[in-house]
Image (cartoon, rainbow over all chains, first blue to last red; front, side, top):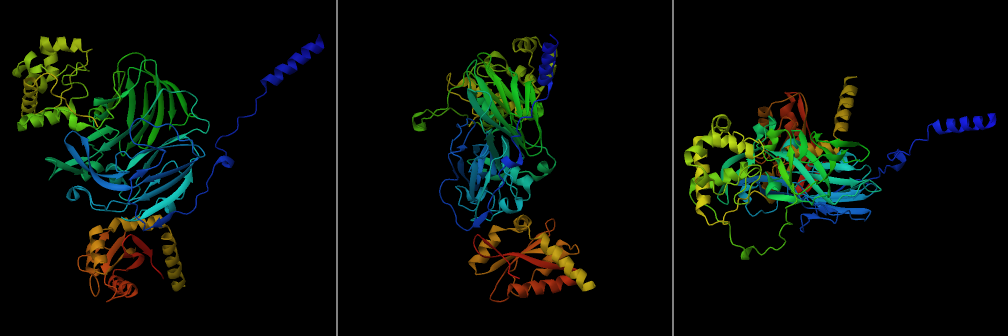
Length: 475
Length: 130
């Protein structure tokens, strides 16, 4: 019996002994730092601005290309992009788009990168794009000498270099040429997703990337398609006072073109805050982040998060379930940023984007001609589409179609001018607040002239045949 | 002793610019595509200098960046990045002569120029042979 007890005690002791630590996935022996010197030539590439099977061009991510070598081309261009309805901005790009395409790889993969500075190429509107200049590429996913790989190249030059992705994560890339702040704020950024060597520990039904960034835009007297050309506002940039804070390069872009998901599905969202100067408090209304992998690395796991805080160039992967039918609102919970356009939807009602490009067969959406109504339309599409539709039914607030038949002009004027006062004194306003889940209409600090423009637009909407008007705010 | 300190200082200074990143950043600060396109079309070259020594004002550099062989209106200056670039006609003045001429003008301000790169043809930022 005594022997048995001794054996049992020994077994217990053995069980209590600390087990050997798991092998370190990031041990120096597993890190590949080999990278031949970068090569700079005067060979100009003339094909597509972005090339490579590892690239995804939009929010919906392509599956990982299993090839262990990813050849990626991201050329730099200067072009005019629309960051909000009617706001045509003179941008600098990677791959001819803002944000630049997303690169997807796996730990251990070799990235062979090539970039031609094509900022000097003729643009459709040469007078409105920035003058050609030097650019560079800084991959946060790489471990290389910046002096060699991230050097600036002149227009017409091409740089090539390669590196191995050693850490899993969601990494920013950006132009690192001085003034870096200006290059990033002009649109030169994107993301590299590096999956763990063995893949993610969960299975997701949908994968999307959301990149938050700021624009600092001021109008000029130059016109693009009849609208003012906007350029970088250096004063606002240095004071960190953005005019637009957006997801995926577009003010309210994913409100009018929501991301699709079905009830019960697990959504994996790769979130990168580019900045360049603001933090993001990323939140999805109506669900909870089951898992958050800070910086996109499953080793940095948090559970049951409501919000994830991301500084400039910080990232996370958030995974959540879609509990039931509905539209789940992605916002920067710093609501000053959300009100500038950092808002989007993941919706069970979203339809896949139309793949048929036969626009010539589609009737054009009606548009007003009265200058006040046109200004009202632009302002509405810029500021109000997050909460209101035009003929598309209820959202966070009422459908605007028919509003001039439901309320008279004096009531609407007071409502747009001082909604908070109306909510205290006006019975109809109080009833509406109750009907819309106590979400108050924010005071947009509109001038009398702006209110007049809104009303002109609303009146014009209500004179059109039902279904003829579509507000535009998406891609 | 003084000569040794000067040589050591020069070596340190050159070492700082053995870093390609810094060199290209400095060039980017004064890179003007219009100046370069115009200069190369006329058979001129464009040189990018680091401004070494005591701090000098933009006005001093602007005044210095003129004279024989220098293309009028081609000087670009970045006081923050301590960079000066000019277009010049190599048939009228060599790069070595140009560097020496500008150094003579800046000597009274205790400053001098170090040629970093020269552009003799499009999309080719060549290292300066010493």
